[in-house]
Length: 248
Image (tube, rainbow, N blue to C red; front, side, top):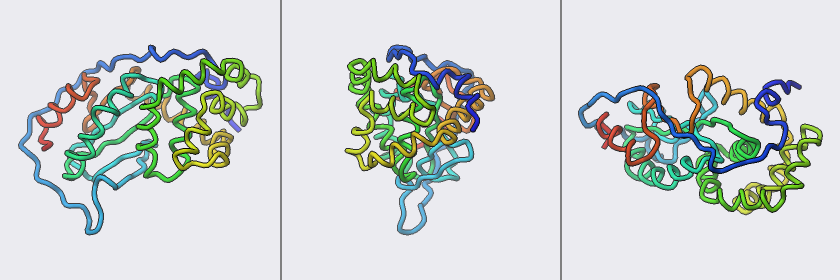
């Protein structure tokens, strides 16, 4: 079982955490002006807002897989700015833009720390349709999750000396995440099994590292529109760019 990538990322040890460590996304890339795009009907009996696709990059996409405007967010589960985007942007995306078939929204992880990787693993543990909703709920509870870690520092730090297939279980317990996700439909046994699957955990970390290196992404949240990085990091900056590109 390969552990080199997790070791290189410092994700096998329970390092100290700080919520304030989010970076602002800042990257080149303009958005060309386009005419308003016509709506694209979903297949009969379905809706684009409930259509979920797991992409080759390991992201989870909501919407028309062939949408002319493909919005991607690289996010960290311990990033306050990402939590703010989930609260302010996702309702509009899901209710206004994704249902037209013109815009798809894909969530990919830029892993920063052990809690981040633990949550990224748990939101993938059940049905693919649950990944983004569970991510949004975890972001909404971020302060409570960090408070749990602060209250259980001894348990959190003990994870670093445990066998690798037990470390992320212990991290999750210290953050109250086993019970948190159990209340949202993911049983404790499911959570423990996913967190003990070191190859799957490592795959999330590897995808994050490889894509960050390939695309030059070093901040969260970072947004791509049709493969081009945007120099924005909030919904009030991003929505006008979508509209400029033709989203309605």
